[in-house]
Image (cartoon, rainbow, N blue to C red; front, side):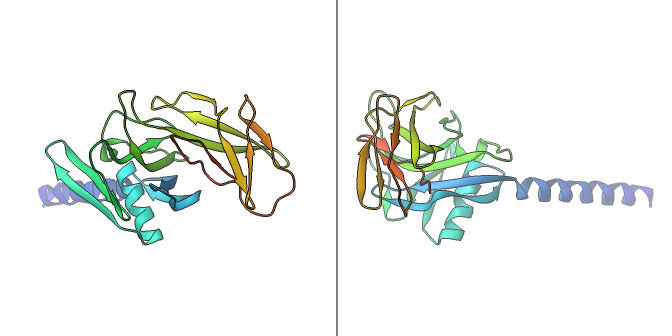
Amino acid sequence: MARRLIVLVTVIGLVLTLVATASGASVTVRVEGKTQSIFGSSPVKVEAPNALVALDAASISGEFYVQVIQASFGPYVSQVGRYPGAGASGWVFKVNGVSPPVGADQVILKDGDEVLWYYATFSDTGGPATLALKSTKKNCYAVSSFDDAGKATPAARAQVSVDGRRFKVDAAGKVCVGRHIGVVRSYAVGATRSNAVK
């Protein structure tokens, strides 16, 4: 009887641990496609234990297609939406601006993490920079460019777009756009577009 009780307590403990792990952390996720935002141009909160589950949660919420293939090195995302990976192009991710050196299923997320999935074409120097936009004061914004290691620099060659108008940022990556109604996004040649900010 005592042995059964110990087994039952152990099983209940394992189930509770799995449930806690499965619910994961409260994170934001954004998915940038080859030509446009697929999900969360303004990042959306999801519950996910790792970056792969964050993408899956986004696909359920946003009703877009994701294909994950099992390979000898683990699962990888071979297609999101209409675009499969091919040649030097494919789907990659960053967590808090950093491209992790492990698979998406191996990145354990913490509350408040920011997950970005994006379509990228790689060169000898790595993947494209990713842009991040933040409001600095009323109608003014700063654009940062993140490399794969998460190093941020001012995106001096970026532009921002709002209400059908485009503005070039200054050498410090800053710009003021005046009064506007819509959301602001930043773009740069060879970089992944930024989040949207009101």
